[in-house]
Length: 411
Image (cartoon, rainbow, N blue to C red; front, top):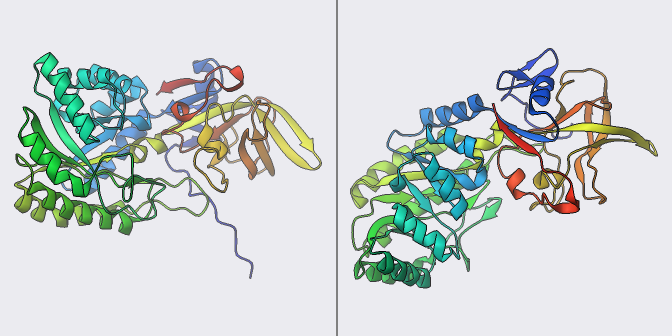
């Protein structure tokens, strides 16, 4: 018996009414008219709220949830997230401005990343944001800037551990890395911080991202806690905050399944007593980006032309890789796979065909869906790419071939 090919997980984030996808309770064609033009990204407030609430219902109450703004820095979305999470994690000065504009307490905001500029460091010191130190030279840079401004910087050490998050889409630790200070060098750096006029806050240990294997995440969390306990012996003050990173993935491709967050939550519950005893009741921070916002967003483009070339149907749209690089397969995929795609105004149509969705760019790389079974579509229909709330617009080369940029809306 021939096996059926793997399929995308069923779309459950958004309701379908009268054959149309609804975002924020608005039928997609109406939302497109309200936005005024395609392409655009749309993010659903109710889905964002539900994602956070569902995760919090599983996690131990003591776990603090931070949003990694790099996943989606749209100011309105970040403002909405400010009312749902306990803190923010930043990767740039611009993200810092967006975060501070929300009113989130600066002490619950941290900034990470190698090669932070003097301006970024100075602003973080002045604002009272926690700086995750990525190198020994960055520590000295922070000290010089703090002396100029006569302010006491809040600092944590970002650790490059001697292990990695297995099966992660992007490995951030283990071996030589540009991220963090190698674990074996951390004790000496902690002792140096003790001799300086700095407010030591804790440790940041981030192992990897986009992981759908709960057992890999729990193993990394277990190792993270043990490493933190060892390093805390050299700390100049108690570890008040321990950021254990995130790594929670979302299913993008056929055959992938939702992450088992319940088993991760159960493991965290089991870890808390040891953390509280060994580290004197630290604040354990789970830092998530993609997992919280990815499923809440869609990318929408219109069919401009329908053509058949040697038997293959092409839907030529006004969107493409310049707006959604990840969906085109050119953002880290080794073998190209299709994102979940639908025709948003013909979701349940029984008149279906195999078609490819391409964009207007003069490159064969401009491919949003490759030979997918979709409802039969024509000019004016709306192509929707799901799972697009994270690393969509900001991870795309919007200036490529000088086409207009898409809009973003939060509904």
